Image (cartoon, rainbow, N blue to C red; front, side, top):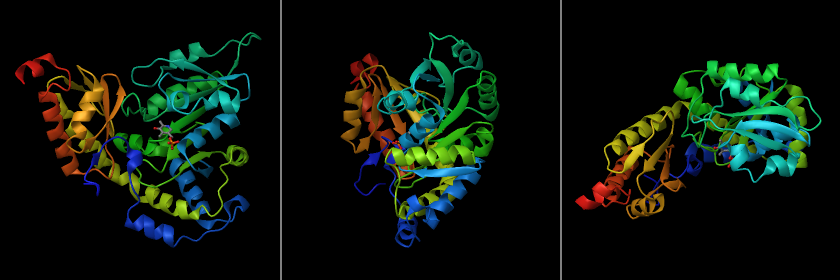
Length: 354
Ligand SMILES: *Cc1c(COP(=O)(O)O)cnc(C)c1O
């Protein structure tokens, strides 16, 4: 369990660098990366490009910057990008598609987070001066708010193909692409074949303290490097961060199976609790729908040292990651049992029994 005796399921961003990472950071060879002289950053960019099957990659401070730099390179003011309505680029990036790139979002509804090929094709604008110009498709894999849902290589290829036919570029928000690759047993590179750009968070389940990578062609990454600098993301002796990122990329993916297994265990425990309806988790994210309000349920969990996030009025998100182990899961199940029996899940049946 975590040192503060809190079992924290709010996010996989909560992972702290382990001893090996801290050692690698302390001893990293560094230089000024804006001058292209940090050997550790270069090593990370080379490794990330290879892992994602792209020609080049760029180290950036956050997943948000990775996505927004990509959008900035692909889109001009007056353009439109197509994405799912709960995608991170639309919901959680401060309106930066408009703010930084003068571009608007066309949002499509898809229960699993992945708009169908036909819906994408139908959303592409005709060539008419009234309309914004459809420029980019953004796919999020895994899809966070759909509950860590994965899209397999065939599903990706089908959507990429319609985008290509319509002349759109394709960016994959692969914040948790490693989770998708592990859950599917497919190399990450095969999930992003033929896409123009892909981002990957090193600072979530992979365990690095800071950083994401953005990959694509040499030309794309050269343009992304300019955009990163313009947005204030040029970092100097960033090798101290890249050193942790290298270990995250090397050792992180193999560990994710544990997170996925624990998410399934948690889901089956919740399925037995009154007033709780867990979704079937594909990866490390478990969404639990409650008969009642989420806030008091989370408060009841917190009384037992368990933290989770209310992501909707009646929905709680549990994220599994390397800083929660089997004991944390057991503690979470115990706490949830108490909360549900008390009727904190809102179940009338549970309340009448209490
Ligand atoms: C976390 C996340 C990001 C990026 O988040 P940062 O906090 O900026 O690193 C992007 N997309 C998705 C789907 C995410 O979950």
